[in-house]
Length: 278
Length: 66
Image (cartoon, rainbow over all chains, first blue to last red; front, side, top):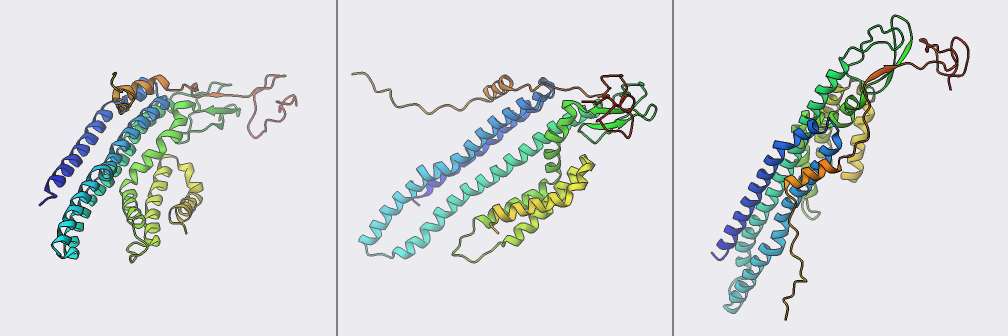
């Protein structure tokens, strides 16, 4: 088979990309979580480091498509042109040749696309788990802070504060009836701004990937072929994911219960309008 | 004749160490606030704000809070 060499090189290239991807993420995973400790829970350095790592990983994933376009596809075309010319000269059956050729080429391209899809998913999973891990560290520190012995600024009577509310609020002292203003501080505030989202995403990760897969299938459908996945099916799986995500947020900050219906409807509408174009 | 070096070599991606060092160096410190309780007191008589009142006027001497 004239394609054997191309296919072997393509397989070796894909295996190399996959191995580099895992090795780089493994190295990053060994040091990223410690950044928060090193910077006294300042989340800015952590987020910047992740941007750099994510950008490198995405470049690596993009190499699959780039290499297909620049090297592999032209190599297939070169063989095809040569073989077509030989068949024409011998007055052979071109259609029969194409029936053999295209499945081989398409299978090779699908192999690359499947790897890209798999690595995209792994990168997303890694991001959620890494941020959730950092979020857990931050939440643990916030719990320590909020369970500290706070007392009324006027009479010094003990004034325990809410453990699952991370904004400033008024708090009246039971003893002297003075209104105190409680400031949770930057670390506790960051439970809402930094930790809550990935922790809730982690809880709903399985449901998110079920949606991700079907949404990817929905987008890759061709207009001239019968529809295999409908917008309603995408929306139904997205709803399952969002419901679980929003419930997980409420478990972290119960105050979010008040806006549950609005959040759910807002997210569904966003998907309808911007992803499904309905 | 000198060799033509004008063609740029592809840029090597930064190593993990470079990325982390850059993240540490460029981390922005927006200033942190510590957790705590405070009470708004009247600038005239020094009274604290009692429960069920607003921050318009002092409940004791009627002085505007702001």
